[in-house]
Image (cartoon, rainbow, N blue to C red; front, top):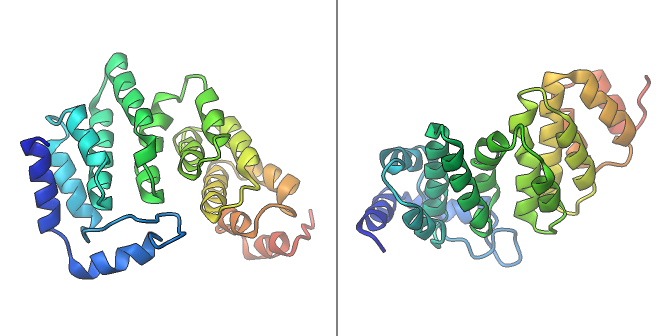
Length: 240
């Protein structure tokens, strides 16, 4: 372990709040049989993790980032995620962007809770693949791996915000009947974001699927709808 990674881990440990460290295992479902099983927590709040990441993202090596990503503590891994995002956002040369993207993809086994996924994939993969072939995301969606499937869905956020809906809709359809509620939420969230950009595009998808899609997905997707329309959709009886 390098001096820099030791300093980062020591800084984060110093910023731990015992009450948060006690609460986070319940919040991130790290108990036996839960999706975050075995994860450990220092109790560091996100703004403090971002401060650490901003202080080092320019100088830290990929080897050192990998050490952080492999750490047992959730906040150390999330700080590494922020480092990658901050670095990617400063890169202008395609070869350097590709190097970071390839590194990120090689470390997906350690992007292993919903906040690590949601804080990174659309900023990195979504950006890089905006005008590139999207086959990677269909492979992730078909992987049978919860976090890779969430990466596939949440990466579309970047495209949705720029008016590119086709792959987001195709991935939503592919993952629509996934057994896990974290994918239900992800799909519903992205459908809602599509609706924020183009209501009719979302409604076209919902007309096709609202009677059979998971309840949680539907609730997330229609959260901002007019109350009467929301009531019709939840009742499974759309009037138009």
